[in-house]
Each structure stands twice: as structure tokens, then as C-alpha cells.
Image (tube, rainbow, N blue to C red; front, side, top):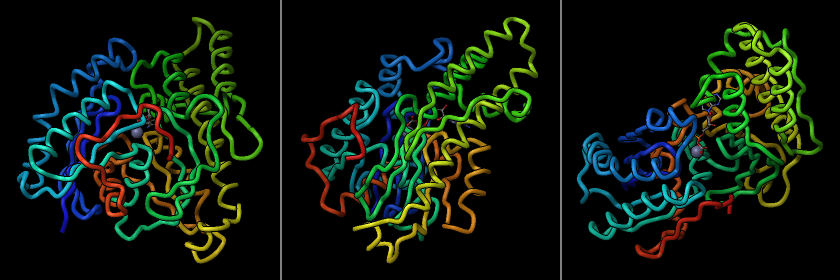
Length: 345
Ligand code: KG4
Ligand code: ZN
């Protein structure tokens, strides 16, 4: 039995978790900075970094306490090293390295994007790659194939805004404030998309684009002006959400039909994907969850992490760190670097 202590501070959640053998969550303490940033209408990087630094010691105590573990019980530390806000990543990495040095433990730097996929492995203990993933967060809308642990092939991405970013901006236009995605989700539940049709983005291949849709919403709101009723806004929220969700799933649907080749196919023992993962903060969206289940049904097995594992958390970082340090990617304390623009690698 190996215990991994995970640390996540890439954006506006401060989180520490203890995970057993990369699969079983013993504790996963998450502090959201929503209240801190609300008055600014978005994340203020300097405030975020300082808040991570102030809160990490207490959150670490709570995570160890919740897991019933002492520092001596921890086998390794796993910390997000990118992508994310530079100052925020530095805080997590600095604290992680300090702990690893003080406790004489190994430390592994974790790719946050990989973490989102591992959230699915935490939620289904028998789930193993190869798999097809749709990772939708504040900064990414990526379709990836994962042939094996620590191996990723990006087959689709966005040309402009990520899905979460599009939801956040649309929410702002609709006067919903920050954080936008969850607020838009709630408002959309009271609206009817058919009353305010918006275009559905459609690019060839597996590429996404949400900037045209965003502009369409802006113009529609401008036309309605001050007179826009609460119902019209709810209808627009529903319509915007529907366009984003259907666009995301149209490409997932297409990717599912694409035969796999090479290593992915060999490891899958055939040419079709049997496992699909939809994850990242936007995978908390009500309509996306319902429609993804319909689109994938009968063709592959779909795993969507529970809501608290879709949004940023340290358990997914611990899981990704566990599986990838056993592959030999563990790094010595003192040699880790943050990489704010880290890609899939
Ligand atoms: O993965 P995540 O927590 O942080 C990043 O790595 O970016 O994703 C945050 C994004 C935000 O854009 C947020 O608005 C969006 O996920 N989000 C949602 C919902 N919950 C969070 N978008 C739509 N509907 C939701 N229920
Ligand atoms: Zn994230």
C-alpha cells in the first residue's frame, strides 16, 4: 500500500489530498477562492497566489487528519507543475518541495491536464487505458487518446476559446458574474433554447471554435438591449449551452467512429474505443452530462467523474503522480520546474 500526498494550486482552488495506490481517496480537501475573486469578476493572479500560500498549511493538516495519516506514512508527494498561473504553481511546488525535503520523500511534478483524466480513474477503480478522453476546462477543450499510463495523443483541440472560457464569458454578458459556468448552467435550466436559436459552431475535422458563437450572443443581447427580459436571458443561456455542448459532442462522436491505429489500437486489442472519459470543470455541466451519456450509449463505456472530481482537486493530481512516478518519471527534490503553458507532453 502506497500513499501519495497530492497538492493542487494551479488556479483558484487550493487543494491537498491523500490517495492510496493511486485509486482510493483517503482525503481530498478543496478550498475554493470564489469569494476572494468575486468582486473582481474573475481570478486575480496575485491574490490567488497569496491565498494559496496562506491556506496551504491548514489544508495540509486537514488532509492528513482526514486520511488518518502522519507524514511518516506518506510515500511520495505529487504536485501540479503546469499548466496554470505561474505564481500559483510556484506556491504549490515550493510547499511540495519543502515537505518532500523535510520528510525525505520522493516528489513528482504532475501535468494538470493528465490529472483531469486520472479523476476518471479514481471514480472507477477498474478503468484502465487505452481510452478516448474529452477534457473540457477553463483553458482546454481537447480530444485525446490515451494508449497507456502517461501517454497522450491530442486528436482535437480548440482554435480559439476553450469551452469553459466561452461559458464564463457568456455568463458575464448575461450579467451572471463569476464564476460563470455554474451560474449559466443554473440559468439554462429555466430557459428554452428553441426560443433563441444561436449558431452551432462547425469546423471540419476535430477542431473546435467558440468565438463566433460568443459574438452571436453578444449581438443578440445588443439587439434586445435594456429590454431583455429574464426569460429571454434564460432562453439565451440555454441556447448558448446547447450550442457548446452539441459542438463538443459532435466531435467526440466523430472521434469514436475514427478507427484507432498503431499503439492505441494494439493496446486496445482492436480498432474501436471501448472506454470514453469526459472530464474537466465543464464536465460538471448538467446538459453535457446528460447528452454525453446519450451520444456514447451502446458504443463504448462512458466515465464522467462525480462533480467534485470534475473541478480542480488534489486527489486527481495524486493519482496522476502515483501512476506516472511508477513509470520512472519521478523527479528528485529541488529539480522540479513550473511550466505555466505545459501542453499534453
Ligand atoms: O477544470 P477546472 O476546474 O479548472 C481549469 O483547469 O480550468 O474548470 C473550470 C471551468 C470554468 O470555466 C468553469 O466555468 C467551468 O469549468 N464549469 C462549468 C460548470 N462548472 C464549472 N461550466 C459549465 N457548467 C458547469 N456546471
Ligand atoms: Zn483544471
